[in-house]
Length: 590
Image (cartoon, rainbow, N blue to C red; front, side, top):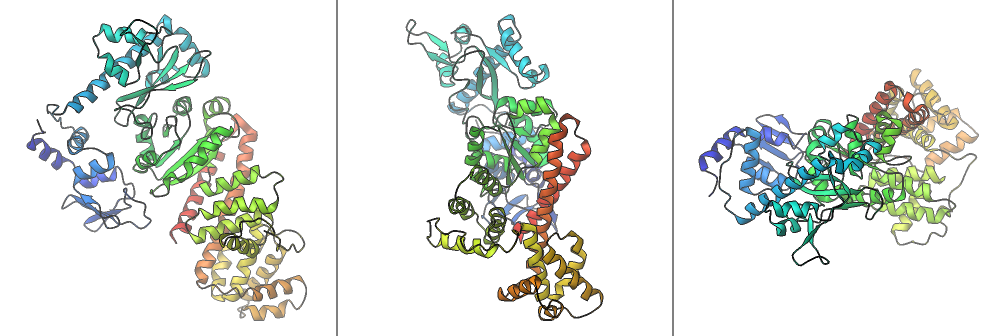
């Protein structure tokens, strides 16, 4: 029979929609009589998701999705109406009593009980004499007894029909156990016999987000293939939508607004053992859109942390684009050696978290990988590879910013690399002559020098910005002699109250390299349509550049010091990372 109407009404009364929604929409803030936030159902930068406490409804003006508290839970948790009632009943502490009215519900509940039986059996075996070798292996790898208990680890013995025999003895439906991939029909024994799919393996139960046992993963003890074996997909287990340890990690993910994604079971356990609990792992797949959709309800940042080997790099590259339509930022970090579990054992959690905190955007990561793998690649072919990355960037302002950085990396002037990119987009896919227009006048101009040179030309073209520049910049902070000299002269004229303009500045530099630089500024006709925005972009890019260089130096020192690294360094890295996030966020929302 259905859930009693009285029960539904009680749950409705106790489930304040604004409180329930806030669990999934961290950006939700009170504005007047309503609450406003970023919609969890589609990607947006300007909040259009509204919750009315008075009417107990929600509505998104962006994607036209709305409803009451039950429909919100149904949509965000992918539940039916009765399931959403039960879900809210658990939150509000109200017991929902009903008879299972559908055969499928009965079947799922039965399958869950079989998995729980198998998990408990495997756990008992691990702590018995039969499981001694597996327990010693876990301890040798560095897994603590507390972690074995928290993650419900077990052992499937080598006996070919250990679980199958006990399921038959308990009169458990062997056909249902076959559906779960716990056992399989034997082709060698007598008719009607079964064997265990998991044999001689350290067992990792896989829980769904509600904490129900959905499947198992098994690591072979000793020799054998495959090294890791997962349950096949079933009515309980869809590997593209379940993350290992999410049921344990979701509270920490919601609190920290960040999820760390690693590759394996032991990698997750290594973090947990060291007090970091916002960590999960996909199950034999790259990060999927379903994974990101679930995580985006709890956090605003996902950090992909992969092993140093090439397989880990390829996995990360496959996973970068899945968050394109979600309200979550994805960053990528790569370990300098090994995997997270072994790395944290060797160097400690502080150094591992320093690697996590140094994560970069997907575009920056791709560029880094191309540059690292370029070797003796001709410049034209290198640019082709980099242009393909730029092509995938959605916003033109970000494309331009990345082209400027690429130009600095490969030693090509900004206007030249932008021209090359436009030729590439127009169909010039041949690398011949890409970068050929680059002219080096003396030493190559690095990225910071380019920014400062653009700044002084902008100030001369738009003197109204000089007052801000006197507060934001200093000649001492400029390493480029050309920019430093011109900025110093601008500062001098400003302090004397004299008029500043690009035509008058020629009087101060009648000849030489600076004169040529100023003439080039005129030639470029640097007059921004929105000078204040152009100034802000230069300021932010300089700040980002300096933050990146400072983080690199600190991380080098962290790697050098190893276990002796100070907490002050880690705090400084975290502070720099947060500053960088704010600056990037400002650029993206302009």
